[in-house]
Length: 635
Image 1 (cartoon, rainbow, N blue to C red):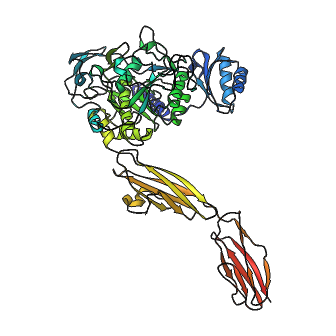
Image 2 (image 1 turned 120 degrees about the vertical axis):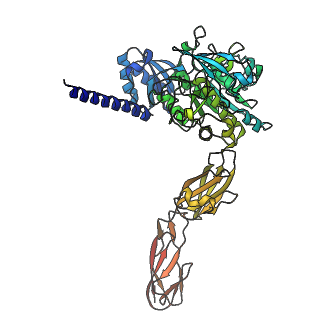
Image 3 (image 1 turned 45 degrees about the horizontal axis):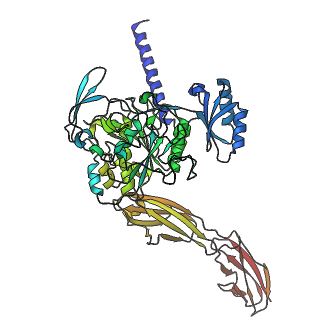
């Protein structure tokens, strides 16, 4: 082969390689829901997780799984974990169950791993003090540590101001009475006896601990301190260190000068253990499954958690987890992952999902650079947060350092919890928007995350969320009009400034910054007389605007009936037309018209008067154009 041919071949191979790489990225980006059929290699130990519909009876579940030769291992509120004897039965069961109308989905019982890595550096300067070791809360620039790698050691010098800007938020809310907020730490458990967490842990006060009875009848015995979804018991002991460390980052109480992001607020940690116990304290030996995570999230949601910290992940798309998170009203703060790659190339679920209630978090160092292990993405990772050499609580009354996106996620969870506590009517979508859009822009990470470095104070004071418009339509059928009852709420701190409306489908620009349109009164009611689309507009005091379209349908007559279609009259006598609208009870406004007023005259109430001999036609017409005629013969 000559040189020209070799060059041609190399070019073709290069093009194929680039195209295939591009295809892989596109597939990762578009893969938001599984097709329903999983590869057999994805099923560990021949275990299958099945979600049945809410109307499927228990005996039907037993019958369906038995028909598929599956053994039920666990069953809780629609979720069934079953096992097949071999791959052939597993495959047949997957095909059969996916066709059943009582089955929502079938999938493997995936295994998840923690999203942290171990301590990776050694401090060269600084004692255990608030300002130096908890640089994520306040970075004064004095911290130094050596980061070890397989190639070399490098000295990391902190850069002043590279932190979560939490202290100004604490100062802004000082003296304010915040609301109670519950944060579920979905993890390896929590050391509930740690002195640094006392007073910061959620308690199920309707339950009596350790009496073996489900006192509050919520389906969980003795869940006074939380729940162990892996073992299905109330033991939330952290045999590793991961969950306790995350809990401290969020809500440590100041013992030994170690504070959580939430400071002195009313934020409480709900321990939800979804991982198995570790072996010899090694977090890498902890295992969580789809079943344990789903059941843990079900517990958190049922027991009032507002926010879930999710410092775990895996590379396979988990249909059950996806569907639960998409439908939930909770906010999920997820560790982006520690692959050191762009998440589009190496998806890490659930951080990969770009839902309105999910914030994915990358790991930034104290010098303003992303940690080399951190997963990143301009489109799918919302913000970076302190996650390198993070000092927090550890089991057995200890404190120590961990590094990873698992440590970065709790920083953002803590910020979100403060927003929930100190702002009015915060929800998952508005919290996400506030945090991402108010993040500090850094050149070092501008291509790595969509927002920037999390900025707690800016998220609190800079309202970027437009008010929410909710409505209820009341139709008064017999009166021919409807009212639209509005509820306009601002989910930030600014407050609602203006609410207006216009007929038809309009845009924000149609209202000209609140100068155009009919102002809505303080009662929040709009009265409309015609079927159609109406556009509601609102703006808050920070200038955030939004519109919502409301379709109103007012019933109108389908036809008009009268008793007589021909009436004989003598001159000077009268007859009253009494039209009836169909369907009955609907509002009708009639107009009456005579074809010849000289022969028969009719007034606005349908009173017909014979004038002179001859014939005339009276036309009855409704407000929507429906007609009926009556022939009048005057003798």
